[in-house]
Length: 160
Length: 160
Image (cartoon, rainbow over all chains, first blue to last red; front, side):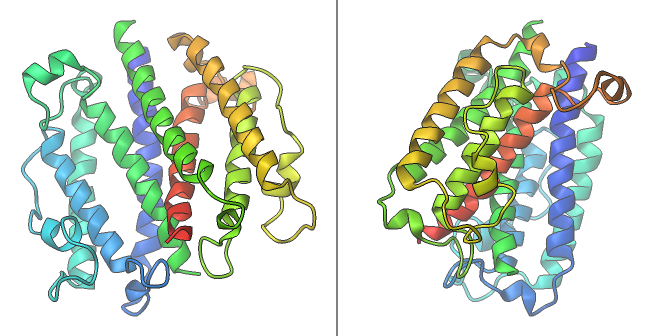
């Protein structure tokens, strides 16, 4: 039991470290800087921040914590590429949503016991989970942490 | 015990998935493509590949598996920025080193038991480990997986 808690604590520690990097990086940008592209012609930082917010929002139901806060972010930041739609949420809306979503997640993650983490996530059926028990909540945590790192690497380039 | 194995298996699964992405991305580049920059004036893909190789090579002693294969990569790809030195290892040398290092790592990781993962890594002293048991081998695996994701996000931009 003590050991199992150690693995979860490590997973959460790495998650939190990446969230803090993202807070610092995105949270300090001006309304001009947030519109910079990560590469010539590429995604704008605002799009990346909204994308991360939407993906983290979707973790709330995936981990069995609660319903989503901003399901409407998907159209703007997940299912369509940047600059393909006229009206996407503005800088301040994304900032507010990012803080709200990660605040909810942080509260929820703290409450999960180590045995919760090995339960299936909500996008896998009970039958499929019998066939592949690796589709659990800890897998979501690890893959979303890496997803965040991936886009942080890009965001840093937009600021140079 | 079964549960502890699950966490380790998940950590290894995410690690392997990122290694496969890197194999595909870097492994298929021509000798011209490997010299592209990830951003205007930024690191070249060759530098990123060498950097990842050096960091993974350093995991071998950190995880108690064996001595490093390419300690000389650090001068070229870790302690100095890209384009600051005349002679860095060439494309084919980096390819060979990447394959050798990740092959050795893969063999070593398979042999580790779940209890090995919670042992201290070799860069932390026994005294410091008593104070902070999170400085273990599983922490190295998670942080290096995120480090790889971070640079993969950048490498993708260099190919656009």
